[in-house]
Image (tube, rainbow, N blue to C red; front, side, top):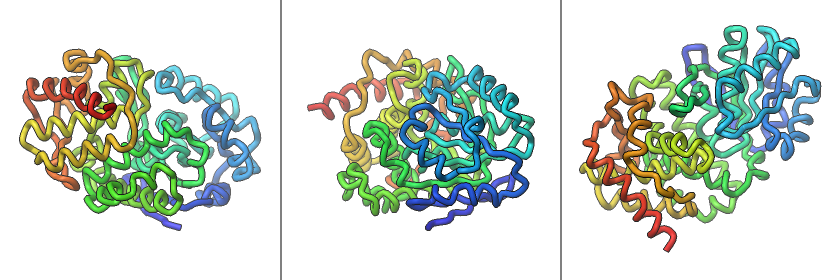
Length: 367
């Protein structure tokens, strides 16, 4: 089993990554010490597929301490946080309780923000059940919810005390959601690991088939990259911004479509295509590397169509991005596969033309 230790301002925590690691989850949570009660926060979808697994893993948790909530991106908001906090009050959660977030990225983000704010902070454990969550969102301490004006605009940096990443939990994941996670995996190869990128180029079909050996290898590699980045820059003041490759346009697409058209990873897939086109058009990236990135993204499978979304529609949302300064968009752009720049300003005409070029990529991918 891989045990990856991550430094944070709140103290170090571990990510345990192995098939079957869920079986020892209760014991590992108890080892946190002085735990009066544990609460499983999950979603109806996750619970319908994996509830029996979690009940076996946590035999001492009463059913009254299992709280399920809608994990649709459109429900990732402040009213949901209030509803969950009130449910915890009614169930008797105190400052020595532990929240176990059992689900994908939305469950982790919302449950994490609840843990960060309930009674001014109680302990948090992540057990991610999607590929996106296992390689990305459960690690690094970002929590948050959306506003109508944009994604994750309300939140906190709140590191978990433990993360248990069990690839076996991905067995029930719908294929579309699994493919959505592969876009985030590609992100890690582009921003920091040319060897991972080449591995994906050679074995994408095997990854799509969820081969256990290759999947465990890829997940661990992504976790190690993110652990290294967030340990060096916990609060996203510099290096950590590279993890947002593809997310600037991706988040804007999610907001522009009311968080209903794209899964998060799919929006990031489109966002990586946009950022790659911007990087090539602004002479930050060679045409050769740009083509390799675009081809690998397209190989994951068809992305939902963009429809009639135009650059001008996205501009005000992009200007409200967390990385923007005084309305000036600051981009995360690859300079070569495995190397990334952040805080890059690009003239709007270049951005607009590149976003318009997404339609050509979409047409070519479906040909």
